[in-house]
Each structure stands twice: as structure tokens, then as C-alpha cells.
View (spheres, rainbow, N blue to C red):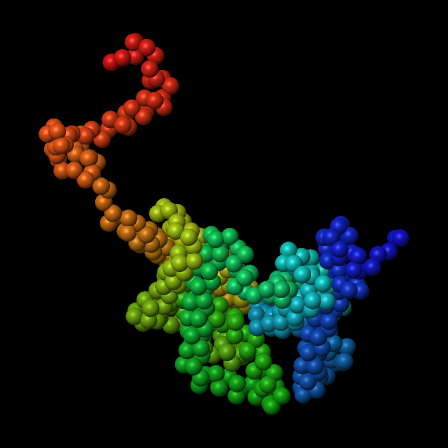
Amino acid sequence: MLTRSVADKRQPGGDPNPVPSGADRPLAITGAIGACAAAGTGLAVLTMLSLIGWIAAPHAGLGLTGVLRTAALLWLIGHHVGFALPGAGRIGMLPLGLVLLPGALLWRAGRWVVRAGGVTRLRHVGYAALALAAPYAMVAGALALASSSSMATASLAQAVACPFLLALTAGGLGGARTLTTWPRLVGLLPDRLRSLTVGTAGALAVIVAVGALLAGASLAMHLREFRAVEGTLDPGAVGAVLLLLAQLAYVPNAIVWAISFTLGPGFAFGTGTVIAPTGSALGQLPAFPMLAALPSGLHSGVPPVLSVAVLAVPYLAGAFGGLLMTRAAPALALETAPVWGFACGAAAGCVLGVFAAVAGGPLGDGRLAAVGPSGWQVGVVAALQVGVAAAVTAGIANWLRLRGTARPGLGRRAEPAPKAGAALPGRGHGDTDPSGHTIYVDPWAGTADQERANSPAKASRGPASLP
């Protein structure tokens, strides 16, 4: 028969195709359903917010079709897809917090695809993530084409690539978490890679925590300016809620900017501007309440004590990461531990460089064409600072571990070899037998005779072999 039941397909040797399938549909169909559900849910939420803003604000010249296009554009912005405005230029300064909405939906979709698709092995989770990501990217490309108008045009290349990568990552992690726990997933990595992952995560956790604390403290110190800008806008009740949501969406960007500040390169808000521990030079800022935390005009650097404390953060983070890496890894050779410690810093630098690159972007082709930190500068500086500190800490910690391991063996002393003519065990030197003769023992005599007997080259071959 040309058809088989699902039970027969799951029998050993019943189906040569390694891709699992659900109870009543192929995995590709299940992934397409999950992709459409995730995209539709996110689009529905953003459409509702767009409708609320359209109703609460004057909407002359913008009909319901424009609201739907705006919602589709916001959905693409949530996947970090840039767009262009006629006469203004490209807009790439996008809120990272908005990525959390599609990320959470894709996480749930990945879990559902794994369960509904009958995936039972971790090595098949990649098929489930790909089955989710491919149709999700197609939906995103279709929305980019549908939302294009004379007012804004989304980047088609980014509309396909960014949602695909987000769905592949979030859906794959969600599907893998469905089958096992995080400790088991980390335990599947090789020892060296697992220790490198733990050390990098520890260093990044310290840097992100300090960046969040620094961004919050800066905003708290400028609450008066924050309220003044908010009062100037006078958004109303509904507008105030929407403005608050927009500011919350930019909180991750602010944290990344604060991290680049602690690393030293700082960030810019416009061409020819800079905000760094050594000083700041800014021009006129847009009327956005969160930007009140930035000092406008020319300002000297932070106090020396605070500058030293801020610039010491990457080194402390590197030391913490190197210590975690050494504790999680087996004992390394003295010359390889610093190399792995520097690799931990290099990995942290790559991650921070990517975050810095996506946390900024242009706001048109004018003065605000350069906004945010430089990705490659942040990556290189972070790799050097965190890497050097992690290498030194890993080398010292690994040396102490090796020293502690070898210390118990140093207390054992080898027994001295008995000298020729020494007495037999149990007899004193020069003991006598009952006949009155003194007995001396050569401990090497038996060994030499045994070696002669076992060595064919020195075996007795007649009178010529006698000494």
C-alpha cells in the first residue's frame, strides 16, 4: 500500500525521513500555522494601539487604511526593520524594547510547534525552528510590501532577514526549553565551550547591571528637566499613556548607551557630538522626555573619582567572568588558561558590539544622521578591557587550583633505597645467624639476576658470557 498510518511511520525503520511530523500534519504545516498565529497576534496588538492613537489624536488625512499601514510598519519596527521617509531620509534609531513582543510570541510559537509537531529529540528542534522561521519571514516580507506608501517605505531586505533571525533564535530556544531544562541544555555543551559560555554570561551580567543602574541614576538626577519636557508636549491622558509606552520601549537602548559610556567610547546624538566620561558636547535635542537625562551644550567630564569608578567596571566584569570560567572548566595548563580568559572577553566584546550597533541608527539625513554608540569601537574596547582582566584572573585562579591539587603529593616522601650490604628486614645491621656468621644482604642482587634472565641479549651463551 502507498499509505501508512502514523503509528507505522514512527516504528524503527518505518520512515527514512529524519524530520518528525505531527499526529495529522507535516512539521512544515505546523510551523506555518505557528508563524501565522504569532504574526497575527502581534499585528493585532499593534493595530489596537494604532487605533487608540488615531481616535485620540487629530487624524485629518489619515483614514483607516493608513492606520492599518501604520500598524504593519510598527510591527516591522518591532523586528528592528528600518524604513525611509520621503524628504527626510532613513530612520534606523528603533526601540529595542519593542522586540520583546514578537520575541515572546515566537518563543511560545516555538514551544507549540515542538509539542504539536511531535518533536521528541533536541537534534530535531532545528527543523522545528526552521519550519517556523521560513514562513514567518515570508509574512514579514508581504507586510513590508503592503505597508509601503508615499509616507514611509520599509526596507525589504531587513524585513526578510531580521524576522527570520528572530524567529529562528526565539523559536529554537523555546522549542529546546520544551524538551529539557536550561542546566541540561548547558550541560550538553563541551567542557571548554560550557565554561566559556558561563564566563561570558557572568561578565555581561555585571556590565548590563551597572549600565542599567547608571541610566536610571542619570534619569533620576534630571527629573525636573524630564517633567518640563513632558509638560511642554502636553499629550493628554491617552497620549501620555502612549508616550510612556514609547519611552519604555527605548529603555534597552538607554542601557546600551550607558554601557558604552562606562567602556569609554561613549555615544553621539548627532554629527560632531559626543557623550563620554571625559566630557560631552551636544547640540539641540528633540523634545522627547527621556533625552532630558543627557546634558545639552558643552560639559566637562564627570568627577575624577566617579570617572575611575565607571571605567573600572569592565575590568571588574572581566575578572568576575574569568573566575566563573575557571571554576566551570577542568584544570587547564598554565599557558592556556589566560588564552581562554581572553576568549571570554572577546566573546563579550562581540555581543556588546552587536548590541551597540542595533541600539543606535540615523534619524534622517540631516544633523541626526549619527545617533548612538559606534558598534565596532564598543566591541574592540570591550574585548580588550574585559579580555585582559579575564585572562589575568583566569591565569591566577587556574594556577592556584593546580597548586592546590599538587600540594598533597608534596608531603609524601619516598622511602630511601636500601644500601648495598644492608641487613634483611627484621634483622639489624650485622646480625648473626646461629652459627655465629654475620649476614649482609645485597638488595640489587636479585634484580640484576632477574634482568639477565629476562634479557635475551644478556642471556648465558656459554663460557664467552662469563665476566
